[in-house]
Structure formats: C-alpha cells, structure tokens
Image 1 (cartoon, rainbow over the protein chains, first blue to last red):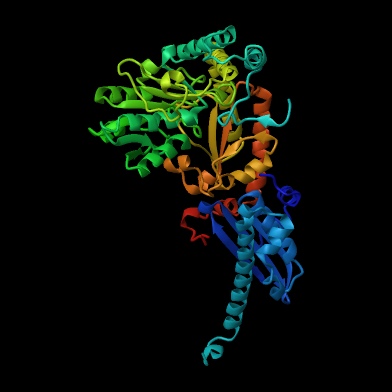
Image 2: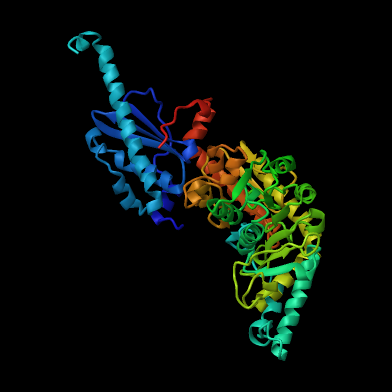
Length: 140
Length: 404
C-alpha cells in the first residue's frame, strides 16, 4: 500500500512527540487501544485558562496511526477545551488521505483526544472537590 | 549496491538469467505442442519436456513418470487434497493436517470440511514443529490422507517429515507434503521422506512463475487421483491442458542449478542469515526469534521487535523489501495465524518481520539492512508509549487496555 506524502512526513518528522508528567497541573492524558490490536496511542494536553497551550503524543502502531496522532497534537495546540472536543476523525482522514482500511487509526486518534480531555476535566473536578470538601456535595 | 534491496525470497524469487536464456528459444523457434506426435515441432517440444522432467525427478529421487506438471503449488495442493479425498472416499472420510500450513492447504481442507470430510488440525510446539506422535494418535481407520508441509513459509521451521512418513507407511495412510519452500533449498528425497504426494513450484527456486509440480507415487503404493481439470488427458490424465513448454524447460533448468549449487549456497545463506540476526540483536534489546533455532530454512529469519509495530517498521525501511506478520499488512486485520499457533502473543505477532535471503543477496545488502533496521527500531521505540511504560517498570500484561 502506498502512503500519502503527509503520512510519510509525519512518520519521518513526528510533531510534538514525547510526554508530560501525568500529575503535572493542567495536564490531561488519554491512552487508548491495546497492544494485542496492534495500536496504542498516548495523547496528552496541557491546559492553561481553558486553552490547550501544548500537546504531546506517543504511538505504537502503523504509520497511519502515528501520523493521525501527530497531526492531532498539531491541531490541538491553541484550541480551547471546547473546540478540541469538536475534532472529528473524518477531518483527520481527509487531511492525511487515509484509505478505508486505515480509518480506524483516525477513530483511535479521536478517541485519544476525548480521553485526554476527559482526564483533564476529571482532574479539574477532583481538584475543586478537594478545595471545598463535603459542602459542595451536600445537596447531591 | 543497488536500491531497493529484495529480501522477501519466501514470497517469490527472481528468475535466474541462466534460466531465462534456455527458455527463450521455446517461445519462438521451438514453439511446438509437446502433445503433437506427428511432426518435428512436437517432437522437439516433447524432448525438451522429457529432459526437464528427468532433471526435476532426479533432484527429489523420484521417477520422471511420477511428476504431474501444474500451474504451481496452490494447484498441486488442491489436486493432492481434493483428488485423493474424492478417489478414496469409499475407504474413509478423515484427513490430518496442521494449523500452520500455507493457505493453499488450509483452504482446500476447509472446503472439504464443508462437504463433510472430517479434518484434524494438529497443533505445533513453540518452535512451529508438529509432533509425529500427535500424527500417530490422530490416525483412525477412516484416515485417508496426512498433509504436513516440509518447511514453513513464515518462520522457516522444518517439520520432522521423515518420522511422519514412517508413521504414514506403517498405518497405510497416504502422506502429502507441501514442499514449496524446501525444494531447491534443502535436500529433498521422496523415498527417505516416505511421501506419496509432494507439491513444489518453480518461482520459489529461481525459475519462472506459473509452473509447478505434484509428485504422485507410482509404486508401493500406486497413488490415484481424481483430476480437477479434464480435457486432453495430459499428464497421465491427472492434469489436462497443453504444457507450457518454455516454463517447463525453465523449471528444469532452475532445478538443475539448485542441484549443483544447493550445498554451498545453503552454507553461504546460513552465514549471511546468522550475521543479520547477530547484527540486529547485538544492537537492540528485546528482539525475539520466531521459529526453530536450528531446524530452519537457511535463508529464513523471522524476528519480533518488542514495542514497535511491524507495518510501521516496514515503512521505515521502505527501500528494503520485507514482510511482516502484522495485522496491518493483511487484508483481515488479524496478525499472523502461524505466529499465533506458536503461542506468540498478539503484541509480538504485530511486531514481527520476516527476512527472506536468497541467491542474489549480498553481504553488503545484509550490512545495510542491519544498519537500517537498528535506526528504524530506535526511531519507533522513541515514539512508542509501550517502550516508555516498560522502561518505567510497568508490566504491560497487567495494564487494563481500552481495547477497541
């Protein structure tokens, strides 16, 4: 199978490859996939004032999976948390010219974005819970 | 050294130029039909076919009359399985084969299974070998055929066929061997192996594509087959159709060259293969050999690189033609069934690469490949969340993955 030039470029020059410390303030981490399925994506965002100021990824998977997650980090930077949630796998398919058999790679990237956003929200909720214990739960 | 490098010789091999040379006159000057008995064109073609048949039979210690030319191993395997089952259906309805056979044996066996034939699928050990005792224990009074390959196309493991052949003789069951990967590479002797039918093909041994053979034993026992293709009664009625004389001639020449060069070539290939293996494992950790450490085809190396995915790895070494057991390289999105049958985990099956060294592989190409593999694996491991987790001391087996 021939890869698109964009996939090859992301493979050779991955953008934002690396990791943040998971416990760092404002960092949300999403890990999706499984080694048995042949792809695992780790996608991390760093949020300040509701804006994603930085993003990083690490991916075990084929070239299309690597390119999908690399592209996702590029797109995430500068977006608000709300805007990031609107990124669709079909946008990734279009940008990278992924063939039908590789669409699952883009789905996985969308899942990774959602998982990272969820993790960020959860950490935020937990932090505010910790700040005002019991009282905020009283009515619940 | 020229790029790209071809290192996928289990898939196919280039036609040796010496083979092409002898084929050419049979396209244009000696174009006769080998079945034309009444003129010089036919006689010349028949003579060429006879010569090739003798050469091929000699390499496997068979009689020339015991060879049926086919279009290749897929056809030979189909003819052996379906032809024997149909011919001997009064005698029984059970066949024995193995889970790591090539699809060209598995699929005909499954097709027979659908028609009511009982098929025993024998397991293999972690080196990919069938246990002859398992074969013995699977035989019933309804068993008519055992089909076990000589050497596996993915991992190169060589099965103990002589022992299996002995059991088959003792029990009076016919033994078919798909020897596609073995003929021309390692010594093959149908008498010593005790095989009754054997498939092999030209394009795996530096001959042309589109020509293969099925060895069909004529004495002790005389094996009979129901043909799949009816017509002019060629090949003793077992496979009708005008013989492709240029291909037959090329097949014969290819076999002749293998016979002359096999002993020295096997030593050369094994040394190159071992250098490739050592060069890679010397520079990279967590590289695992798939298959048997010693009972293996000389040109075969199948290894898994933990924490990197096979297709991504192939993409990183685009200028080298290799093959992977990764699901991403197959249409089914399932990783290699051969590696799974060995008990290799899906994760490592996804990480496997098959190197197939051949007659035209040079030491320079091997050194280049070692260097490129090391760089590509390091590039991908730096990118791999699994490698990162393993380095942090996380046991990947205990992680709850969000499988999709």
